[in-house]
Length: 98
Length: 321
Image (cartoon, rainbow over all chains, first blue to last red):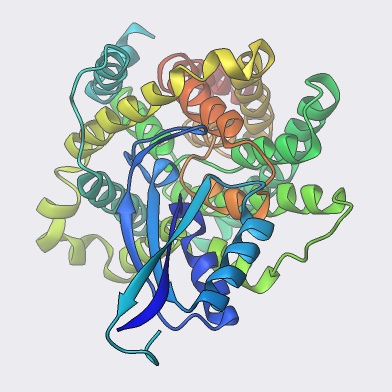
């Protein structure tokens, strides 16, 4: 088993396509996006319509890339968008896939 | 005015609003909301297209120029009021201005059914005015916000234009318009019972959801302050008045002028929020969403429409309609 990092980002659906473009630029190999809803300091994100919808993005990558990803997201999005992120250690079967 | 309030669409909106405020567990599934908005936009386009196919092209030019002028003037007026009277920050003022300059297709649809109910004739090309007014205001407002920004983080204009001009509402409206023009009245006959007959019922259903969404913003009313509430009512009145005069000078009938005034008065809550969130990220969404959805939209739906019709009658003169 290989040690990797799972980065989970919860943010606004409004910036989904921007994030996907950024990921491509930064060399992220893959990610999974799911619709989400919840509550935070920017109020209830009920997902009743697009402007109140959240997404959860999961990225499995190596430690270095995970750190880079967190730094960049913080710099570019934290000021103006509802966004949280956290990382956990995970084990994967294949090393070069992530 | 009471007549207008007793329209099922308006009553459904009120039902959604009340249910939301009372915290009922009533919810319209997001997939249904999206399907309904898709249906409404394409049908608004198609209806407009069919009417357009019966209209001479020369008569459209002047009103379209007028609509374009409205799309540029309204955000500038709104911005000036918000910035200098309301003391809003540049990004917030520009973001709200984008919403008031852009238009609401649902308000437009309710206006058409209002005019039909009152037996007021209107120009067949009115959907073209709707499409014309959707984008310019968003671009104007975003340019204002960019102009004042000191630490410029370059906006990828290519991506931005792609996003605005190929947004769902533009694609569906323009696509529907073209399909409507191409097939015309006769071609529409076989699909009429899907696209045209259920329209008013589904519009009412959609407004139930709009009521729920608006109710979710009601609690933000306190946060946004008295000025924005007054702006949410005052701005549509100013815009509608300008719209009425432009309607008169571009030769529209009373019905057409009512539509132009309503378009001018309406505030966007589909195209503008999506574009503004990306292009003016510093602006607080609570301001523009609450003003547009919880104040201006219900105001236009209930008091605005009959009022703009009255104004159009006064300004254009009864002879026109």
